[in-house]
Image (tube, rainbow, N blue to C red; front, top):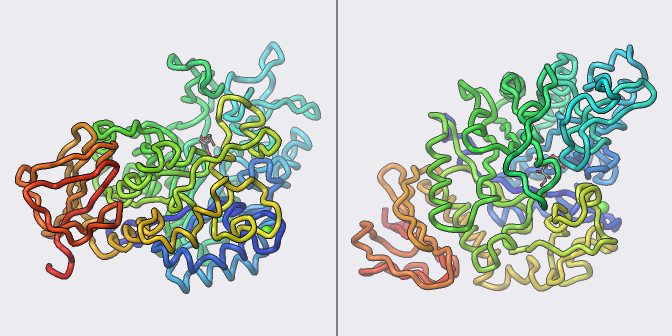
Length: 534
Ligand code: TEU
Ligand code: CA
């Protein structure tokens, strides 16, 4: 039963390894550093860590350009370090999820070096090679997400190869069974090591149109949007055959017990849910990114929750994401005060939550000076704010040099307030956002209503978002104030009963609810019967 799996009740935590903890003073986070911080993560109360790519890579896209699917990049450590990480994490009750990047490899991967060497190389068909259009230009109008055409002309053999991202990230040809097998073998390598699952990078891109039709123009395209948004990628991505591949990826997962397949998919909800598979034989969790671009208004959020709940196939388990290494930090999107309300929303909705490292400290988007820019997306498409460095700055541990991240100059600058908003400081402050996250994670563990319960919408009016979670005869009510002004709700109107189990301000637990439920500005609360009473 899906609802009994560790990943359904659990909470995932994304680590961007370059930025979590440096252990050898080169300014770049690494596996030994993560091992040293596993105690922090189990104390925080998460169930699994997902590591962005740690495989050998020229780092053109910081690991999302893989040169060896079964190794560890020396910048992150050794295979022994990795084995130690899995062992230590498991000993602490933490699962380990890896980032699989099967849509494209690095142009330095031996497969691509062979593939580009001649038209009749056995690996030629492992990538997507096409003749030029009659005018000598690219074979289709498909655009790279990181700027310019998605096609790169290769002088040596007179053909173009396709790359949905950087030209250093050629797309693999997933119509070729040998490619599929090679990646499945790599998955088994990690699964045998005890890895608990994969987050699959751009899983919806794997298959492209076999007729190579041009993508249609996007009527909603406006200046200031990233250039690739000028076209709708209906032929270069999300092809129906992709779901067959996803089912195969799932069957590799199913060769082992209790493993998890997560798909990274940026599609509207109605298309997204297809990735659960027609017989729920696809991804167990196709990432739901709806909150990343949501308008922070009660009615909009209630509507998107309803839309998602209604679109879910029967038996499919939901999930929610509030931040990741590609999008601006939640504290900057909604503001520092609402970041606490967002935390309560994420951890009280129905479905597996994924946290992004540092969000529990209220980390904000960091302004990156032009000379410090690292992200190739920003370098290729400057000036319109697509850069992702600002959400990838070093984790803030304490008041020592570089906020305890590294003895050396970090690869990206620290946030200006890094020492202040560090784990050490916030841990000592009883009402900090870090202690709110800890309290939410504890409450979620204690109350199955919060992890496994039904979702019942109650109200979305003005700044008030109100819902109930119900499991086996027990309910809790969640009331979120998405604005700065106080809100008062009549208790009998919503059948409200019980006490405050948690306020985002961490100062009114145990308070009995009277005739009204009074929320301060920017406050969220969970109301219910304390578990001792049930
Ligand atoms: O991102 C996929 C994706 O859709 C990106 O285009 C994302 O929208 C972009 O970063 C702009 O915000 C995945 C990874 O998460 C990303 O870090 C990689 O750069 C990309 O794939 C290529 O592997
Ligand atoms: Ca290091």
